[in-house]
Amino acid sequence: MPFTVKAKIASFGGYLYKLSHPSSSTGTEMAVSVYLPPQAAHQNQKVPVLFYLSGLTCTPDNCSEKGFFQHGAARRGLAVVYPDTSPRGLNLPGEKDSWDFGEGAGFYVDAARAPFAGKYRMETYVADELPAALFADPLFASLLDASRVSITGHSMGGHGALTLYLRHPGKYRSVSAFAPIANPSNCPWGQKAFSGYLGDDRAAWAEHDATELIRSGAWKDRGDLKALVDVGTADNFYKQGQLLPENLAKAVEEAGLKGLELRYQKDYDHSYYFMATFSDDHVDHAAKHLGLL
Image 1 (cartoon, helix red, strand yellow):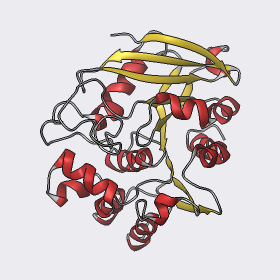
Image 2 (cartoon, one colour):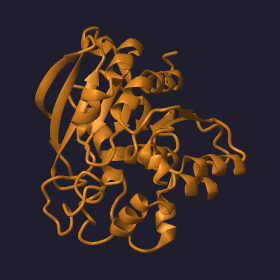
Image 3 (cartoon, helix red, strand yellow):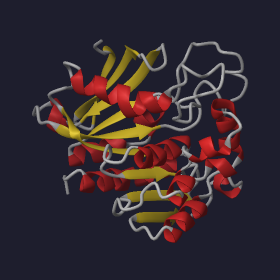
Image 4 (cartoon, one colour):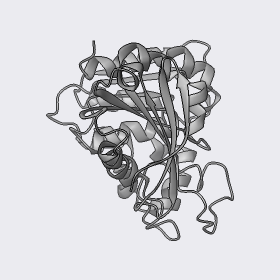
């Protein structure tokens, strides 16, 4: 079914579309925003696509309003897609008990544990259903290049970007992440989410953990990673051991892989001030691998 346009907002010479559509993955209406740069919005050029995955508690509005990805996207000529972070309105038991699990915190996995199984299918939604719907929609089909797609994200969304990139080789040209939960099997956020969505089998957790995927050889013989990761040194979640980027870097080194650029940004925290400062870098990273630079 086509998308319903809730709003069309001028931004950096292009348009941000706030949309909704019924999802077969979640059984709910899902919100999503799509930014078309001026090259597509006004010149009818087909442009590559960058999927941006948000962090805990976020909606499609947070980054589109505060992350300034549209600035770099307009300059380079690529579209940005902002999915939601979970189904909403299901009213499942325990879904709204805490801010870091349940609604607004889908962790980009397909849940296997009741009551979330069959509804919290965010990997299927983001990796398969949403792009297929966008690339077939009458409004976007002639403007979005399905053959040139990259992915990025922040915090929980950084975890999602890294794991979807590793789990779906060939789907994305590159990956980047701001302050990703890089080894969720070994941090409180990830352990809470994985046990709630996937159960107690840590082998199942490892299949959705970027560090453990690298350790298991998920990227073996696939070339360079084409990955950019930024972490702020003043990020309290980094200091608390929720992010663990060092574990990812060690796994990459031990696997003999190249192509991970891990940058520690002095004095920056976990906020959108951090993201807005470096969003152009992440757009440029994607643009390079999407053939725009």
